[in-house]
Every structure is written in C-alpha cells, then in structure tokens.
Length: 490
Ligand code: URP
Ligand code: ZN
Ligand code: ZN
Ligand code: ZN
Image (cartoon, rainbow, N blue to C red; front, side, top):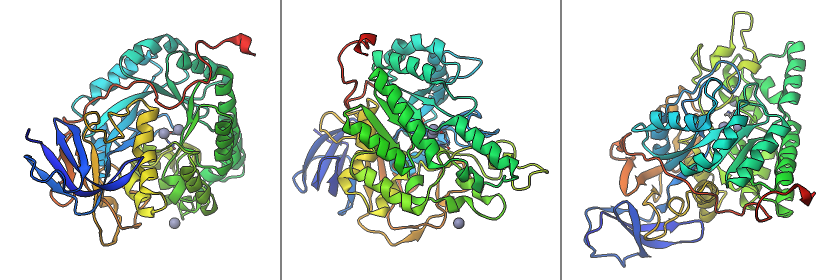
C-alpha cells in the first residue's frame, strides 16, 4: 500500500503515553503507530520530519462562541464567524471545535436552531465541528426534541444561571436535567448567581462606579461558588451528569472536587484566562480594561495556582478557550458599545462579556510548561472528545480508528512577542499582547491534510474542508443509578 503521509522522528504524546514514534496516515485515518525508524522504506506520497518536536492529537476546543446574537450583556454580537473562528483555531493547533446553536425567541425549536446553524456552517469551516444547543428561557417546549437532537448527533447543551436573556429558574433547570439524563445528553452549566450579580451591579452604579474594573468587583468568588454548589445539588437530585463551564474561583473548584469525591458525575472546565489574566487587566485608565471583560472575570494571581492544581489533580476535566470575541473599536456591536456621551468610561454592565482565545489556547498553556505532555493532551483534546462523544474518532491516535488530526510543535524556537497581527481571528486585539512565547504549532493536520504550515504559507487549509462530526454520548461515567429517574428514591 502507498500511504498518504508519514510523520517521522517526532515525540508522540497522547493522554496515556509519551515516546518516539512514527505515524502512517491513509484516507484521513491514523493507520500505523510504530517505534521511530520502523516505518522507513514504506511507500508514501509525502513525509513530514518532525525533527524531534512533539506530535499530539489535534486540539479539541469544546467552548467556542461564533456567529451569536447579542446575548451576553449590552449590544455586542460575535466578531468571529464560523469561517474566521475556525481559521484561527487551526492556526493554533485546534482541529475540532464545538460551537453553539442558540435557541432564539422568535424560533424556540431546538432542532431548528441546530438546522440553521448547520446551514450557515456548511462550507464555512476550516476545522471539523459540532454544536452544543444553547437552551434559553424559551426552552421548555424544546425538551421533546431531545431524541431528535440525538439522532442528529448532538449530545450536549448549555444552560445559564445568569444573563437577562438566558437565566433559568431552578425548576426549569431540573426539567432540563431530567430530560437530558433520559436521553443521554450532557448539560453544561454557566454557574453564576444572576440575581446577586444584578444586585451588586445596582449597588455599584448607585455609587457612580461605572468603569470596566467594576465588572470584576461585581463578580466576587461567592457569586460563582454559590451557583456552582446549587448546580451540583440540582444535578444530584436528578442524578444527571453536568459540566460546570469556565470555572475561575478556587472555592468553586473545591466544591466541585468534593462532589467528585462523593462519586457524582460532575465535570468541570477552566480556560486560559483563569491561568494568565488578572483583575488588574481590567484596571486601565479610561475604557481599555473592557478588552479583558469576561464572565467570570479574571481573578488574582494567587488564584491561578489553585486552578493549575485543579488541572493536575483531575478536578478540571477539560480546558477550553470560551472564545467569545467582540471587537474593541466598534461602537455598534463591540466593546465600545458600552460608552455613551454621559458615560465616557462606559457602563460596565453594558460591556459585552467575552474575550478571544481559540488560537492562543494551546500555545499559551503548552508554553507555560506547568502540565506534563500527557496531562496537556488529556485536558485540551482527549477529555473534551470523551465528554462530548467524539472519542476515539477525535482526541486519540488509535490506528485504524482515529482521524489523522495532529498538532506538531517545533523542536525548539527562539522566544518571540505575541502580537495580535499574528493571529487569524477577526478581532482588533488579543488580551495576551506582548506575552513572550517560546512555542507555536508548526503544523496542524486535519484528517491527513496539512491545514496550517507556519513556515510555508500559514493557513493552507480551505474553509470547505471542515466537516460536521456526529457525536455519540459521553464516554465518561454518567448517572450513578441505572434506568429511569424515580421520585421514590427520595
Ligand atoms: O464572558 C463570557 N464567558 N462570555 C461568553 C459567554 C459565556 O458565558 O460563556
Ligand atoms: Zn458561560
Ligand atoms: Zn495592565
Ligand atoms: Zn462561553
């Protein structure tokens, strides 16, 4: 047989192992994984010499907001389209992203939300992709559509405990968890107490405190830890698996860890912004701090250690970007839409929440050197694939089974300063401007095709190449009891 591609002389890292292996690829799949040198002489159309650099399964970013309407405070709508967001993803080593299909007021059908997202996505993705359904306050009639969503290859949804347009009551959350459990769907929960947040915000405004830094003041740890605790208890009542998204606060991480120790199917996600940014990044003269406004907000330097520890000790199952980008210099749809003549430093409550990060996720965390290669692959690729039903097609290098999705790093690189102009998103800033980098993906390979070649053309993939991937249910532990939920258990 003639292979399509050999990747030789790399240090192959998976969630399980690190070692010197060569890889043979045919028809978009990994077909051989063998000790370095042992594939020499095989017929192949193309060979990549990794020259001792790390070779890993391509990144899976399971939390990316693209082409979304104004949902997250103020008037902001997504800066990135499916096209620009997925282009940015592959340039940062990510080969699969899970974006969101939001349920909208005028169109409450969840199945239609999915179909509309799919129609817009077709031929607009550089990476492979799927969607989580974003269930809003118009949700209840959508519950009957869960079986149909499963047939379409969707096995997760996201709900919110905050944001005007999205916040659900506890009884609504219970309804969703029950239906999700019944149909093998994983529920992602944005755990912040919206009522307390609004009250805090009103207190600050009453004291004439409007600048971006008060976004952090209005979101203390307690807002997150209270909602995290409540979400866990609601999921325990139903015995339904949940994933707490974008955890930033050490007390919330502690609550999650205790639930896991009790054997509950409680999973958690964190993001680079909670490892690198601080609340001081919101505290700049004028409005500049709005660039780092996201929810939960960046915390203190002393909190970062607890989040790194949570990655190392399995409290956090996955590390995603929560890429939710708004342009800074855009008075209609971007961060500056929160400014008006009466409020020259804006009103923090109207700053659209979210920051870009789909391209910088892998490089920032790999550069930091604080996770072993196996742990890095586990939280950025393998576990998101397991949790969201993509494994082992994605997130693994199993011969004959896994897609040939790879990120290949440089054997070594001289340090350079990160600049927004190097990135491929449609955003006029990065929160990580000026960070010193000592690594960047050299090649990104999607189903056997080189889609990013940093030294020869950059993004060389095409936006017609990305495919919708049908997902099964999670391969991580689910409900503790078998069969249907039973009120008599209480
Ligand atoms: O600030 C954030 N995280 N914006 C994105 C929306 C969300 O809550 O995930
Ligand atoms: Zn969220
Ligand atoms: Zn600063
Ligand atoms: Zn998000």
